[in-house]
Length: 302
Image 1 (spheres, one colour):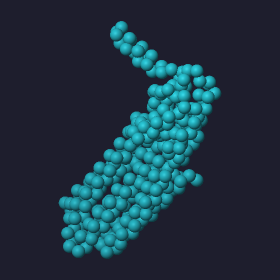
Image 2 (cartoon, rainbow, N blue to C red):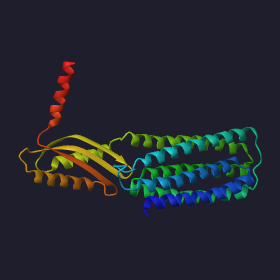
Image 3 (cartoon, rainbow, N blue to C red):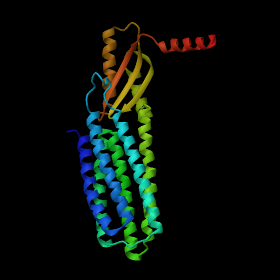
């Protein structure tokens, strides 16, 4: 089983445990902050289960129907995660508004405090694990999941602070105010997930430093005069590179082919944590200049 699948199973199981604990004591205590946190954990569980199936399908090899694989299901999973984060934030905002105008005492306050301490420790451990997996696999689904649970970590901390203040001061209105703060923070964090989802669907280029390293590798290869039409993108944990490399027109085809293989090998070494798919078109001269001249003459004619 891949590390990505293990991560989604761990996050699903952890979310289930947190839901059971928070929901039980949230209903017993009547704390809107604790109940809101339970609802958020319930949504987390459904998202993590969906992420497992997204990872499972994305890892399937390319076939006759999907010639380039199913990598972009990662972006769909990230979008679903954004929707869930945003909805959970809206629900907490609504419940906090209700609580603000109907302040009720919180029962079992001492137990609720211990519940949130336990939740904080469990969520903190999960975030560290998911961030480790995301860093190792470059997987957007796992990275989004880590970001999601990090918002939970902060919201759990705020709930703990809220219950602590109420425990010592009996200011029950703090429960509603903290609920608002949690909701706004959760909804704001969803923007980061949405941004990455959008950029992946738009086939955004690799980081500028990485593209620069690719350019250096190409230009440093023997018999290479120039290059053009360099295009890059990333999907899931796969990085794509397409480029036209200009060789000496008198070079043997076999030598040019071997040189292109060497370039591909060096590009693969840039990041061994991902899979690289590099397509190199061999050119005997820079035909990009001809294309440019053709386009300019076409404009003049029109």
